[in-house]
Image 1 (cartoon, rainbow, N blue to C red):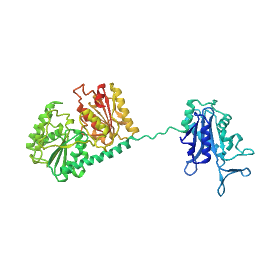
Image 2 (image 1 turned 135 degrees about the horizontal axis):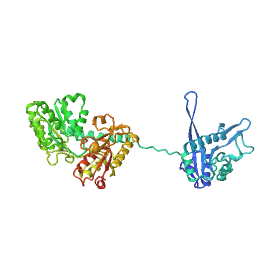
Image 3 (image 1 turned 30 degrees about the vertical axis):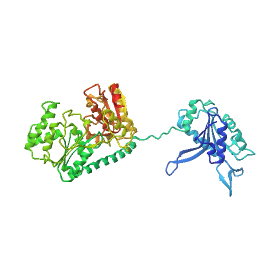
Image 4 (image 1 turned 90 degrees about the horizontal axis):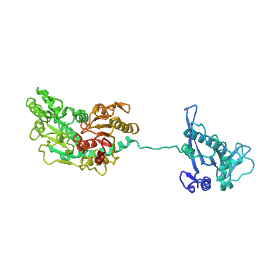
Length: 564
């Protein structure tokens, strides 16, 4: 039996004449024949007004027979009459007769259009269809007598009695048709190419940016729920809030600072990371900017020392002792000379604050002992303070156990990498699996990173400001050292330029701590169990920066077992 396209039972075809023809063709032709039923077409034509018009038509049947060629069939069911004097065709209906189009003119036009369509799509180089093709008209409810009408031939007319031999008749018609290609039989390649011309490959691909938008809406709803926590805390002037990665700590810290500011308080919002501080400054509404000071802890140290005339600066680059212990001591000296204080202090990234930093922070509060102080932290993201970290006495911490930033798949990756539980709510978007590739060669690793970014931006239509590449190293020491542009835009190592859409961000994992991007490539990642320079905490922080799409490019095979 031949294959009918669309794949329906011939008995389901509503038109009685076409139903009978379809059943006969499917039953009589062998399984390698493809029969297209009710094939629609559009053809652009020129006109004087708009310049271009689309003409539409429909071919009742197209028979693609690898042993014979391609035959186009027009079916005219019912009682059909032909007036040879006026060359008019009519169909008998309940109240008389109804004019119809010349079926032979119709099938010739359909043949011309569809052959052109197949050649244009599949045989443009040849300029012709490399197999026999022709046409015929089927009158499944009529017989005929006399000579063929003008433009027709008796061999091209199939009547009711022909249905029992329609398989043989189609091949007999094609045997009389010329073949520009010289071959009668269609080999597998030509058969496939003819079918591709009739049924071109057409795919609807989900666009990445729409998927991200859809997921983002779901995450936004979860974040709104987290904000209600501040309402639950109500009038508590001091609180510690502990949350897993992606639980909304930074959003809540910013919201609490704004809440204090709306009460008329002068607020200090302080964090560890300079990039995060710059990002937070953009999140504050203009009307609240006079009331909120945003800075890093060391930025506050430098600012107050400058106003107090206290020299501030490390004796050498990378002097950790200065930043960890001397800087807070210098801030204490400066506070003796500078009277400015804040009505409320909000701290984000508190897990990176060393124990000796809290005294000067408390003294920055106008009421050193009981002034408003909100502290947000995640012990699992402790990258800088190590064992020397602590919190002021703020009572039992309020817990944020649920991730509301990442998709469920990325949250699962964070759980595995950090060896911590990062639960998500049932209504959180599922997202896609984290992709892990082990690419030992640095130059090839850069190519892989560029490929993913190109897919996301060019095909997926993400904006450059939605994409970030993170590495343990600065660009000059990373696999991306020689990369100057991505998707036609320069690499951005500056957060503000990235946020303004000037290019894809390339930065270190630690510099991006506290920030986020819709799609992230984490590259140059070693096996966390084989080095002290890059720990599981670093990888945990890096992975949790990705909201919707995460790719990890490792340097050593051992990494894969820690991520997947």
